[in-house]
Image (cartoon, helix red, strand yellow):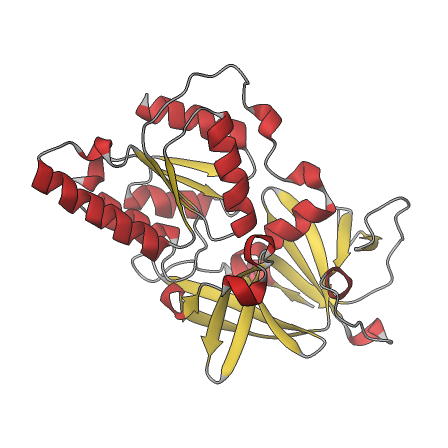
Length: 308
């Protein structure tokens, strides 16, 4: 048994911007990855207590210490073959989006420190477009490790864990103030766009990684300088995830806040990984607000406060 909490995983490099610690695991011989920051513990598979009337992918529950943890059979969920004898399988215990869950996998291989720039966004044709469970592909030596959208997995199994549009009032005024969203999960990006539409924000530009978002922001800043107009005419706020291929949200924030013109634009970090360490790192880079997924109501009210 390995307690990942002892490792105090680092999300960034020395300047807090560009390093990912990726835990590599396998299912049916396929290589997958999860951000170490999501993982609290790894343990050998053990007998579980079945849950009545649960999602087919919920294998059962167990109580490793003082909490009852729900176990998701990831091979079953992903349509991959399981092992006839599960005694040598592993459980990855996780905590993100203020939730505890465990994922049944076949093996846990290694932990890698790589740059976010080494994680490429997935090909929409190969990985299912808007229904993709893949947020990126990491090349590690001669191996290609597929990074899974675990927030999407939990939402599929328990929709109450996801963004709830009911948190947003139906009687809001429309706003054409331009908002930039950087979110790598195609599923969550789609839900965020629906939430922004319901909140009355009609001028929203989504990007699936920090690099593309920064390219747009840099071009917007140059255009505003040439035209002699305020940056707010191109972007009034940036909402960004932390985990993203090509460029993570902290690196994006550092670039925005380090720019003389863009630095005045509010940056909201909307992530499943908000804890004291992440918040401290973000504040040192100039983040204006930290919000934990899936609190969409708080996101909208914070956006209102910062730009209206």
